[in-house]
Image 1 (tube, rainbow, N blue to C red):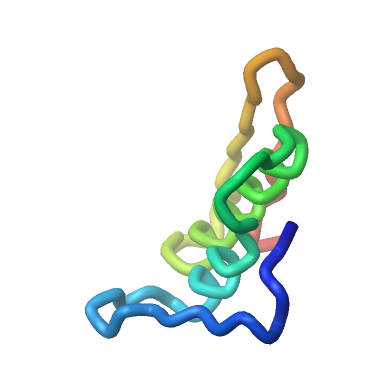
Image 2 (image 1 turned 120 degrees about the vertical axis):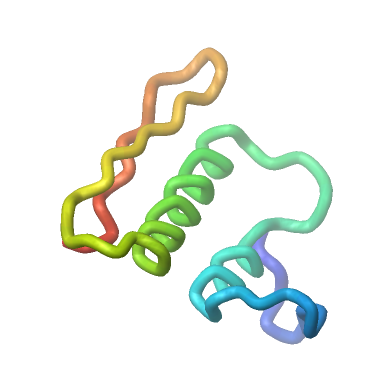
Length: 80
């Protein structure tokens, strides 16, 4: 469950992150149960965002996430 738009997220000034990464982090649900398939999709989104922000080349970055007891989830390259 994502936070409501009305809930303000305060990022400490000592945290120097790209706004894209902050936006993805804000999509995390509050503490509590988080279904594995949803969690895997979020991790894929975060991996793609990190790749988009920090990868210096146009070479594709291949990633996959395997949740225990589930199939691997392929993460598309953020540069495509």
